[in-house]
Image (cartoon, rainbow, N blue to C red; front, side, top):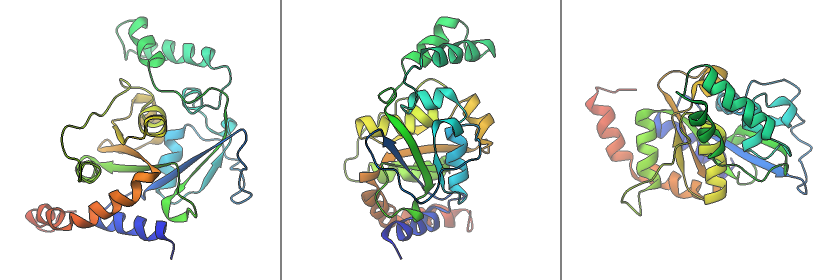
Length: 241
């Protein structure tokens, strides 16, 4: 059994996760793309939908044409010329009534976190258990209590205040829990946005947390170390979930 499969099983069992932990690796222009799995031909609605599908067992190797949401492909570095997509996103978010002014919508979109434009060729989004090499980012789809434990785990050694930057109700899955951990090496949580939830069809109680792949082993050990307080809360509910 691979180390990643063991860690995934431990995390699912320890936290009673409904969705498996998901690994994400982005391939740049100069990176060799694996022959297996083959590129996914199915057209998805968004990167967030891909994360949800992978959490239920799907392995997805995606080019930008299959990613659906152009804001997501812009954030993740697939688009060389993304200005038109960002402008469309500004008008869309303002048009449906998420912001009181077009300027507020523009501030949200333009001030988010973006990978280098036009440098990403493909994204492998798959259950953590299937990875043979450490993914760049690990994403958890979890309810608020499970996210609480994950935040305890990432802060287990350091303690103190945690800053969890938010993109302001848009670009949650692509920017807040993927691009930000990649660029800044920090974990983060997203409450997701309207588009994220419409396209991923997640339950209302679910959030997502992303962390750099190099933080996975420590998080795994810390969840195991917190078995006693996790059981304490579960037992207080008479077995709980």
